[in-house]
Figure 1 (cartoon, rainbow over the protein chains, first blue to last red):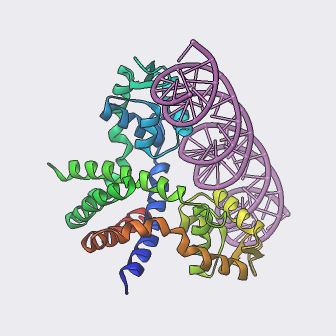
Figure 2: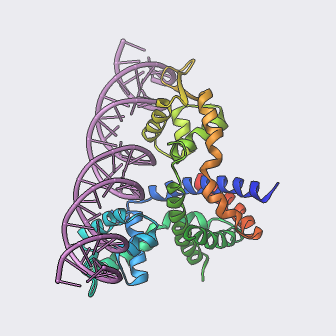
Figure 3: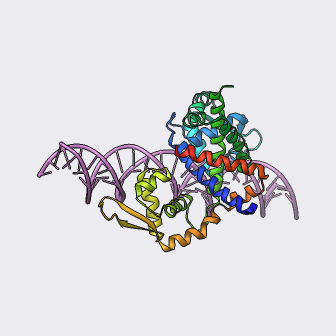
Length: 143
Length: 143
DNA sequence: CAGTGGTCGTTAGCATTGCTAAGTAGTTAG
DNA sequence: CTAACTACTTAGCAATGCTAACGACCACTG
């Protein structure tokens, strides 16, 4: 089997696993009526401190209009604040509010509870494999 | 660090990687105006030969009404056929048509092209890690 | 100092995905 | 024969994510 063939088989297998797992993780959602996408954006905001919509969209790998919606939902709940950019009048600076940080801390753990329980039941060797795989996948996704 | 803590960190990292990768794979979509979900259902149908909506929903990890929609789209395009169950009047048997099998064969490879290209660029050791990870993830998703 | 072109964010509109609740039709058990 | 259960669908909703188009703003150029 060539490397080409191997990569194609692997791609199919990976996409299959990822699609199903993604559906599963999404199902286990009603944490604090914050969705995965919203929590993910909030997490990225906290890690970076403050970002423009464009930057946040790039980090989250979505198009700017999609991020506008997500940020809109978060702003409605008072979890993030939009402030004008100090020098560039076109840009907006988005940052988490106090409440946003509190909500994030509260729900960040509950979010992955279902998955964490499954993983805790795996043999340590499998977890180690997944840990390395996660790093590789993140690189692939960001490339 | 306890196993508990390890599992939680891993869960967060995995979910992050999977969410981003899933968005990426979905983006590379316009194959034959068949979506990932539709191709996935079509694939499951071919592997199994024929399935009821309930069975197909279980395999795909979605609720029956969701599968009704997906099958509806496939049926519109003439890619699957709904036939009455021979003995149980409540059930429906779904099977791929000739055209469905042809379309599937044509697009199954193109579907994962983007991902396969990325994977082909990885060191073989990384691909091997991902291959084992895919198996583990499939088990986790099905559990 | 106008004008031109580019960038940023948003709005509008669309399709898909996926859910729950409820309805219909058929089957099975008492 | 009725009651309860099962299978599938319909209806309605929310979230995700896209493209196209628009208004505001910046930066550069003549």
